[in-house]
Length: 156
Image (cartoon, rainbow, N blue to C red; front, side):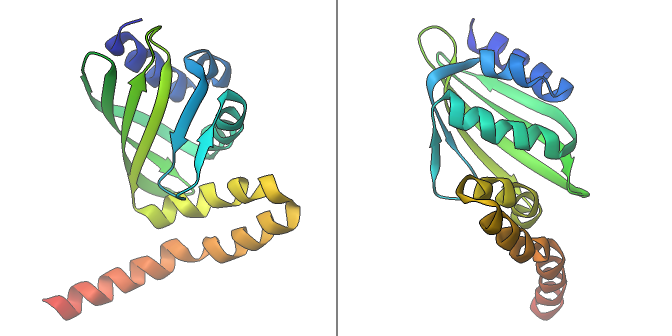
């Protein structure tokens, strides 16, 4: 598969929330860099578990643009997660077989993404940690939105 075909297949899998189709596009030793944590997720099994939570968390996902190079693609997406509208930029590097070898995701507002994504990430370390992270992160979007409005008023 060339980079454009891979980008189109990823977009189709994300839009239809087809976990199996997405996993078929990933290299066995894939590396995923999340906007939520500095920890990198490695291997199809670990990234697959993460992506099952990501797919379940999205109310909508739509690719907005795509650029491709020899062995990479960059695309933008917009979606809705946890009741919040989000914007994403994703950079994929492909292996020689056209499978996704590396993914770096950037998104905003980060608090909305973190509120939905952080608890499943913490679940890898047990149910108690998942609950704690859920409690901590649930209030982030509202708190940061209020702070943003205040800072904007003070800066004007």
